[in-house]
Amino acid sequence: MELRHLRYFVAVAQEGNVTRAAARLHISQPPLSQQIKELEQMLGVTLFQRTPLGMALTAPGQVFLNEAQRTLQAAEQAQQAAVRAAQGRTGTLRVGFTSSAAFNPVVAGTLRAFRQRWPDVQLILEETNSTHLTEALLQRTLDAAFLRPGQALPPGLRVHRFADEPMQVVLPASHPLASRKRVALKQLAHEPFVLFPRAVGLSLYDAVVGACQAAGFEPQRGVETTQLSSVINLVAAGMGVSIVPASLTQIQVAGVRYLGVQGRAPRATLGLAVHSTHPTPTVDNLMRIAQTGPRLWDTGCQP
Image (cartoon, rainbow, N blue to C red; front, top):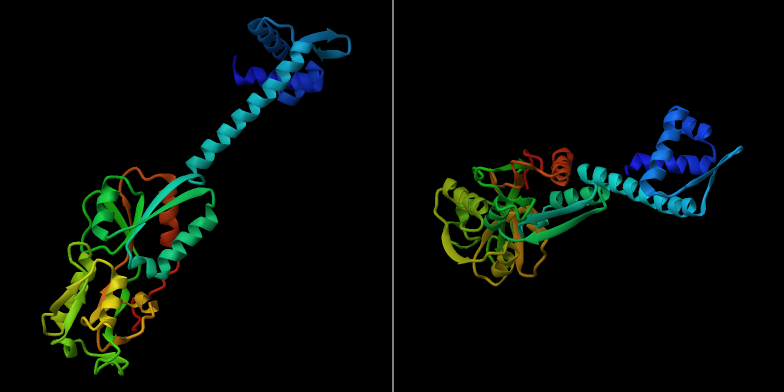
């Protein structure tokens, strides 16, 4: 028995007439009559009483009609579900992000736009460092990740780079330079730095250290923390100074001041990384949102 048998049967039952049912199905009458006979033979049941006025359902035929309609409805729902999944309109999307990336408005903007466009996709979010995010993408335990890419990603991944984000100096409020709006990095040459470990934040670490080296000094290592938000609190505690992405200046902690960098400011990278092979429709949709969304940090801006 095939779905077409059920469709033919339901049409005849609803029309009560083979001629009208054939016209509705856009087929000729003799093949339709033959299909109904074959169905009755397969079932071993008489479904219709043939009358001068047309076709009337028998008692078994009425029961079969109810079940046939449910089966056809379920088949239609299954087809629609498969189409929605193929279009990325349903399913699950596992997205990772770094603690610092979460503060950048492009991350929230991309996720919000995706949620509005595809509300039936379940989003599973995970926060960790860029190193772990890269490993999870390669192992396919994550589908996509907002991270801070270095010079090159491992083979097997591709990344959409957002516009680089300017960085700012963060000082204790009691620091002699804290009253200024901008500071030259060379003025921090003798200050201990609160740093993000290179092992878990390669690009941010290199951006800070590289900027200091370009200013003519090697930064003095103070304490390290794996959470960029903790950098702000450690600076407030007087443990040193630091340089952070401008989006982190929304963290308002008593005892710190944010200053612009005099001259060329270091830049923090941000990108959406995915596996380079066999992306799912939901991953493609997320990447499309990221690629067409607004660039919130213009490459020429200065803090």
